[in-house]
Length: 266
Image (cartoon, rainbow, N blue to C red; front, side, top):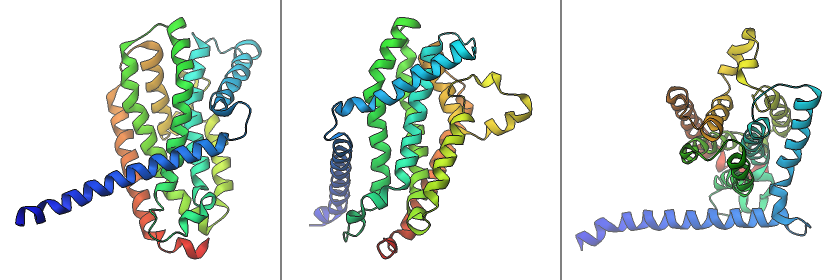
């Protein structure tokens, strides 16, 4: 009897984790399917926007304002895909609670899963577009074993995005201006992150601003792994990983503190 009693809490925890996993998987599927339901291209819309952005930006910065960056199409594609995943995560995650009001009002539902689901949907879009990137890389710069190391870098980016939306989503419920601020911040962040240019092209007097941008380090790491086939400096990535974990922990605690009062504000 004592053995059964001792193992029961562990089984309950495992059952709870399995239930959470199934809930998240189902919500991601529903969110993704709903987004593309009824459209002619369907899931191809996950690939079309970054590719169109690639064509337009590549034309501007190779023909109109040449930046003379080697292998610029794949250089740009790595940046666009990574930034698009981050921007969609934060932008859509900020309004995740408003968009799924019926779940927020459901008693006992783990509301904190909703912003995280949005981040995972954005990651799904990235995964669907990844084959295009990998084929382009194979044709231009070749296949590198370092591609496999992109997985932990993407995990850090997902952790960072999840932490940010856990902070912003409940604030949006209380203050509707948050969404507008986030939209502006994402637009400005695109230009202040080396998505379409190299970090070395940044003027020295504003370099300090870029050192505060975690997406700079994540983008540079992905380019080194994908294009150059080299392992990036672990030091800055470790700092970004620690900072991302801290942001996630802070977001989780803030959300937990505000969760019970959210239905009253919906």
